[in-house]
Image (cartoon, rainbow, N blue to C red; front, top):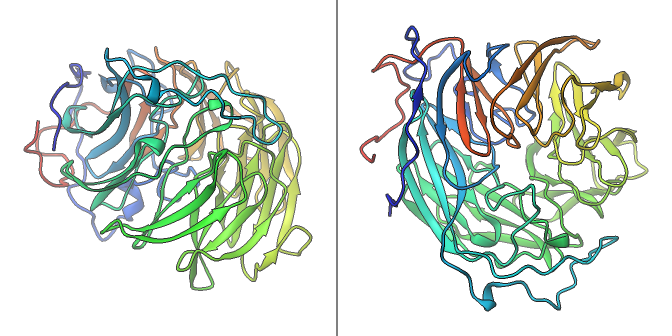
Length: 471
């Protein structure tokens, strides 16, 4: 059912000359140039295609801006002419005692401190929303669940931090303890799963996004209880396999890769990073060395997967997947390792043969050669950036970094540091930028922006992607 209980706030249109947009996937266009199906983009490395703006502000190069109800810091995804995002909307209805966390539960985890039990929260409604890429209007919005959350999460987080994923036929939205949902492109729920309640370290909340490959959807469930990874048939929702994990809370999203003709689901975590056979769930290889509270998602290129963490220590590993079997800690498959200045919350960017990442959650930037681990530079201060959760994105030989106060620094993608521009919006930003063609989609805590040097698209110039009957 489509919930029409609320609508997005009025769209702010910035009037300018109309710009054309491709109608369908043409033979001379790669599909990657038209879609952003996962939170890290078509290559899952943060790499984007197109020529986005270098400069913008609240009054410059904003095609449209819309208010987003509730709170969610998940990164939107894009399929043709639609953006899809998640949000959690607090109501005035209070929770009950049974909704509150168990005060006897020990949330310390390994090396952690005891979490503070929280009072019953207000009932929250959980939504998946489709936005028209052309003008920012709401195509549909579906309320998939409502509940008083048992954990409210970190003060800087949200109850809708997991980003959705799509194959162009269905949308998969994971709200963690609030359920996993498969929706069709018109917003109707096809199937749903209840995986239980997470007990996260210190009640910090949830955020790992689902991963999709072929017919298989993978969800990682690392917490202070019985951790596991589970695979589902993407069409029917049938569970294909489930494997226990010796892990505490982590927030890293699985990365699914083809290795020697077989797919592996690779998950970074505290005890060990592991590669799982996608067909069976069996562990193919594992490698210890990450810090606790693993959050960054893996990057991959040229047969090497890059794993990183940065809480109470620093860790970055480059692992060659060909021939990887068993424990890789002291094997030749561990190509190189790096032990300083790595990220805590943001994922690394793999772009132009380089790895780009900030120290912890700060504006101190490092750039390494992806093949060798050699430093091009490290500890470089990003102008105006003090705190950052958003992951960097690369496009048009440039790299974009967006801080929590809405400040974006753009630098050149060369071997030396070159600052190109600074930009500011009037919103806090924790989601990562989405870049397609000449557009940047920036999700703040209050608003969603379409940033482009071109004006609004003319009617009829939109990329067709299906039914638009539902307002």
